[in-house]
Image (cartoon, rainbow, N blue to C red; front, top):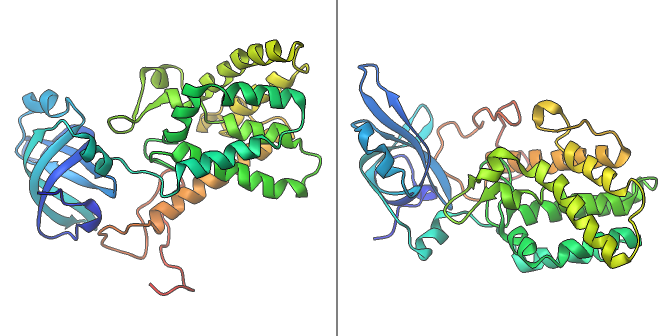
Length: 328
């Protein structure tokens, strides 16, 4: 029997199937009894999960694989879809089940990668070309870059999400740069290509989306800046001469500053025109994608008040869902 898809849940009826177990925690009821609270996720969406009669001693077993098989009922609680879990078992998903559990890009990965490499081939300065070649010739890095998610939850959190986000930024920049002729196109396109590349080591995606040890201890920003030094040495050997003075430092600055503000994870505040452009563009795509996925998702799930979303911490607001010029 196939699993009940989250996108098909209406807030009424029986639920059964295999789901990713996200952020499982032990809560306490008003009567002091332990219960399991979690998110249950598949490729179509996620729902709140609650198991009210729960033995904390079973927590380690239930969470051992990151996936569970459940039986229960669905309901709406405070305008949110909630699954009241009756039975829960740890589960080792098959390859076919993983396809249904991990969200993937709606766009063709081969076509997106071809567009990215095509834009990289338009670089003009020999130093930028040499450095880009080193990255593109790293087969393992490019294999991971093609399929990695861009995040665990916020924006482009799906297989191929990093590639999709990167391509979107590069296309936006290519369209906008003629309006800013004093910006260096090579530096901007290359920086957008590598700005989140460190996420291939920050995240793992073979069994759901999680932070790796490297992701928790180093992070994608530091990793991206470190890689530039390693790749620069190879590029210089291939060129037979040093890269232009300051070139790698400026690229590292853009990687380190692309989150814009220190409180948003930036290591430095953007301090070159190109760094400001990259940071603003990255913010534009991330926030717009988050807004669209929250207010106007491709696959609608059961909600109570359809006019507004819940408050989104990344945007610091709740969003109005309806487009007045399109029929609902």
